Length: 168
Image (cartoon, rainbow, N blue to C red):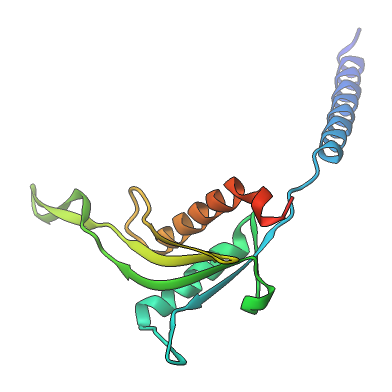
């Protein structure tokens, strides 16, 4: 067998393998139906008809909405009436330091700087049930990471209670 026919055989084998793999993947996808997304609405707390917001809460609402759009579990509702889950942002805080990192201050010198933890406080409402939650990421001091962790925490609640929510 010459090199040319050997290469041809390998290419044919690779093509057949890729076709078989694609057929199995398509069959597996058809057998496992996708779990429908749950509509979520993100808002600020209202008091006497006024939104109880500051710059930080407004930023966290935007971060959470962005994470909801990105998630596989949720779709972002434009109105509370269209949502199964309502996430009301009531505050955000820095509950302490998670760890310290060295910060260079001169040749051969450094000082240990604290890394602040970030946490977002919400009220999660599903039907008549309300639950206060605080979510903070592990090992990340960004507010966006806190929003991402919050969406994961809400998704865990929804997943555990999917049957009671009436969603498949």
